[in-house]
Structure formats: structure tokens, C-alpha cells
Length: 358
Image 1 (cartoon, rainbow, N blue to C red):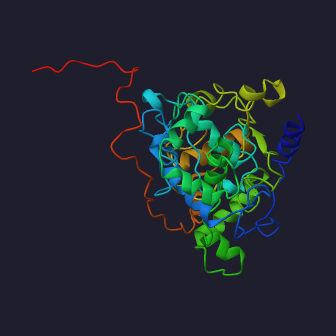
Image 2: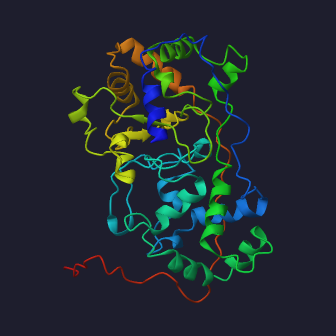
Image 3: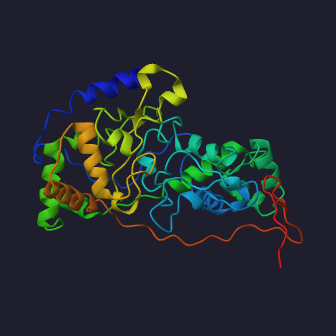
């Protein structure tokens, strides 16, 4: 309830515009918040990276974390809905993993209060990676001999290091290295006024004057910094009744309400980052907006009750492209292997087989 009230208070600010000069523009910090109970270590990050890329964390060995959150690209899968186990489809678009470490809550509805909590969810979700339970996950990992020394190195002193909490801590540690600093925007607010083009600078002004910063503020453009678990939520659509409600199915998913069942949370959503937004199409929680231009039009009308001109859209989009940062190089890790045996099921009992025809 406190989070919902906080969000509604901010919604009341939407009508207040500010110039770009008055807005407190912030560059991305050098590192994201790191919880005291999960300090970064080289061994933990390396283990987390291996786990992130290992498809054997899925029921039939076909999907890894990277399948939906491709760190060789934009950190998502550029699909309206990700493809899960048994060809299942989720109802929401996969958020980017880049800069997710700066979010104080994870998933579109904010149901996970940390990267650690988020890391556990997809692995056992039947329409995502499909492992039946945490016990099944641990049984599989323990059957891969090479994982034990990696877990021991990452969690020294632990009598039984291969456990679900340590798996989540390792993946989260790796994800905290996935930040994209040094954008043209960051260089601009640090004093390099040549970092933005004339149109991007004009778009930055328009972005503030329209009121976009009521939601997309802070260094990550996802709202003010908060303690872990205190997500920043906004109602979407704030101004219901436009043609976009039906065109983009905006009212079908109730957002945070689907988790909490609190009426005050109906259509509340965790505010997503805008960093690298030009690379993460399609847009909105359901992936219904195919282009960034569309997304700007929809958000201006549904969140600000404003009809923006084509010139304003192009300027704002130009500014948003300046939020694309420097991606740290990602080398594919070698996975610990099994010798002489496969540990994934040979047959998917959920799929029907079709006899070969001649």
C-alpha cells in the first residue's frame, strides 16, 4: 500500500513540467548497489556467468537465462513474448538485463525484491525454464562434476555449497557486472556539451518539459533510488480511455495487482529503465508497440494526456538514442561437462510426435 500511495503521489506531479536545466540529470554510477550479504568476488561472478549461459538449468536442456536476456545483444530477446519450455509463451515482454542491477525491484510487477530473488523464478517456472523444483535443479547440478569446485571457490567454507541460494547469489553477482556507462547522455551531463547532437539536446529539453521525468528520473531513468524491495511503480495507463487502450491491449493485464490482489495495485507497473531503449524493441510490458516512435506516442497520451507532434516525437526519440551505452565485452564461458552420459531427458513427453512421411 505504501508503494502504491508513493506512486500515486508522483502521478499527481505529472502535470508539472520542468525545463531541462531545472531537471536533476544524473550520470550512471560506476557500480550498482551491492547487498552486504552477497559481496562481489571474481569467483562468484565467473560461476554466475557460467550458470547464466548453461541451458541445462532448463528441463530439456534447451533454454538458458541468456535465451531471453541475450547479453550478446540488447539484454532481452527482442520478442513480444519469450518462448519457454514446451513452446510456451509468457504474457509479458522480457525486460533487458543490462542495468537491471540499478532497479530496486525486478520483473514488470516488482514481485522480486532483488536480483537474487529474480534469478530463482524463471528456472522453476513451468512456462519458462520448466524445472520442477529447486530440489530438481540441485540434483542436476550435483550430477555435473565440474560444478562442485566452482561452487566451492565461489562460496568457501560452505559445507554444502551447491544450493539454490548460492546459485541465485552467483547469477546476481554476474548480472551486477552488466552495466552500460559512458553514453553520450552521461558525457553530456558530466560537462561535455558536444556529446549530444542539436536534436538530441532539444529532445532532452522536450523530454523534461512534457513531464516524462515524473516517472523516468534518476541515473537509470527508472525512478528515484530506493532500498531493495521498494520498487517505484506507476499506474499505466494513468489516463485511460484513449484509442491506445484497445489498440495495444493496455487493460488486459492488471500488473502488480495480479501479484498482490490489492485493488490499489491494479494497473501499477514497475517503471522500466530507458537506458539502451532504442535497442530493446518491441515496447510496453506486452511488446505491442513495434517502434520507439509508437511507444513515445502511447506514453505521452496515456501517462501525460498529451498529443505530441511528429517533430516532438522525433526529438524525444533522438534523445532516447543517446542513452545507449558502452557494452562490456562478453566472452562465452566453457561449461562444466559430463563424460559419457547426458543428464537431460531424451524425450519431451509434452510434445506429440508425427510419423515420418515418404
